[in-house]
Amino acid sequence: MEPAVHLRAHSYEGAIDTLPTVDLAASATFYARAFGMTVDAARSSQSRMVLVRDQIAMGLETNGRDPEQNGAAIEVDDVERARAERIEGRDAGTALDIGEIAPGEHGGRALRAVFDRAPDGLCFSFHTDA
Image (cartoon, rainbow, N blue to C red; front, side, top):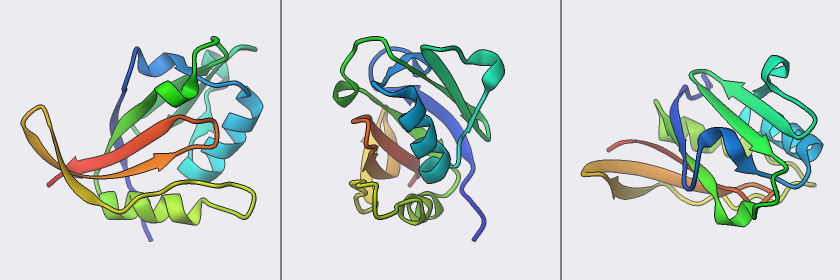
């Protein structure tokens, strides 16, 4: 199966380049395996990691904020493929809460979205126009 293309992303609260996490190394491992992202070493540091995939970049920081109070909305070209990737990215040691694809709306746009909670507590929606 061809992977979904990640087109745009924005944070639920604050900037997409300052999403909070507690453990950068564990988060990097998870997002590489489950989201197919890679670390942009040139833009990363000891307390901040920039992850990239397709047309998006997402920054994780150990900044003291609560990851369970934030997350990101990621627009993809195919929400069914994005959900299948999330399911394939799971393993016995990673508990993900992947929902079903559901209709939604944001800013007057009809969407189809699936929600996923990462082990670090961040919540993600993957969506496409309905």
